Length: 548
Image 1 (cartoon, rainbow, N blue to C red):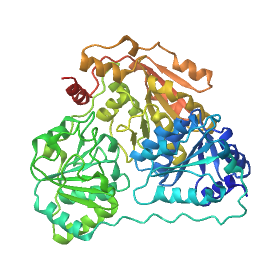
Image 2 (image 1 turned 120 degrees about the vertical axis):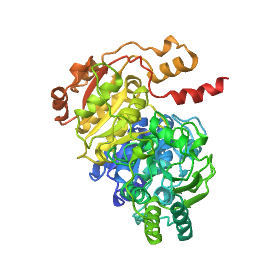
Image 3 (image 1 turned 45 degrees about the vertical axis):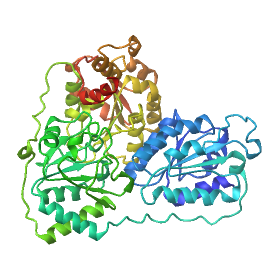
Image 4 (image 1 turned 90 degrees about the vertical axis):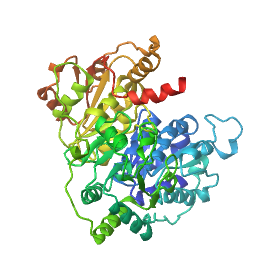
């Protein structure tokens, strides 16, 4: 058995069904073996960066190990951004890269680059395997590391001659189940007593709550405290919940900012947030000022980074929440029903007007789509409108990569999400800038027959940069403007159905429904140059502080 086949057998036995990447000479042994392995489907993308984002989204929404592959040199470096993204989101992704033959290393071979040190800062483990006898052991070791403890990406580089080497009939090792991180009972008891004693408080929810929303809401109702989320966690707490106040941080809501700023007594329970820049509204000191802080997380490195935490509780978040609920009930805390507006929350209802703006387009679009639609949101000025204005109508409805912020991630994430959960409607909200980076992977969705709606806000400029410079420097460079391109025309050339919108009257249920009934992707091009200031002013204030 070739080493390449042994790697694929290991992946197959451990539940891997897709391989996201691009074939090339230095990984040809792996792709050749796939001819005889129908259990694993190669998803051949148009760019390795897109493959890495697809793999990350697939891992996120299946809860399983995912795999992305690229050739030596440039193929490998194209995967690095996706690895960094997976690292930030704690996603178990194996990045497999080719390498030049061992005997040619250091001789300026074609596409030669030792990428194992390049991947180390953005993975939990990165290794170059130079002997065939070590291949299966190292791949298994890397995958075990990926799913263990705090999950995250790993990287293994395999020289092409090592892939082709015969290693006999090895025993395929199983991946051991991840051991839960159980919080210390003493910490739970201390946290419960502290929260019980505080009559007022707030629950600050980050993306780490994704698999624990029901428990989070049960705890919130038990305490009777208002809930705010980070931008990354938008979509986890239903808009209709009476204790939900809104988003705090980048493009957040005034009600959430008011709650954090004005109600500085009591406690702050932080659940699944690393308290980064976009989550904390540029490290706003009011977040913890005057409050007793309890932070629940399974990553001990997030404690006491920027903010002093009175009581860090290390453990899997769903376990910490369940144990905390049980302990609070044991202590006899009275249940009470509290509404967000009791705490200065409850944003005013959104009204769609006839004005052709980004806000109105997104709100009108949401009315035309199924309630359980998942929106994979790219990076651009439209992202701030999504965070600030679009509603959370169902659980886990937004994929927003705001804190790492790689343009084009939303396009590829839509494909990974749809492959992970085929029955769930998926809509990508992106812009022309992101489209010109990774838009060709809409063809990948077509080749796979994936019914995804790609909504492209086409303003013929780098909108977030344009508005950011306008606000910060009171001027913008003419290079931020781009030549206007008919993206619907490009879609036609690719054989992809599209709808071109130039006014509010064209965005109607009757025009959207046919696009949702297709057996493949469709594009809605929104031709709109919105000169209104996006809701991202605090971000600009933060950047402006460095120019004084």
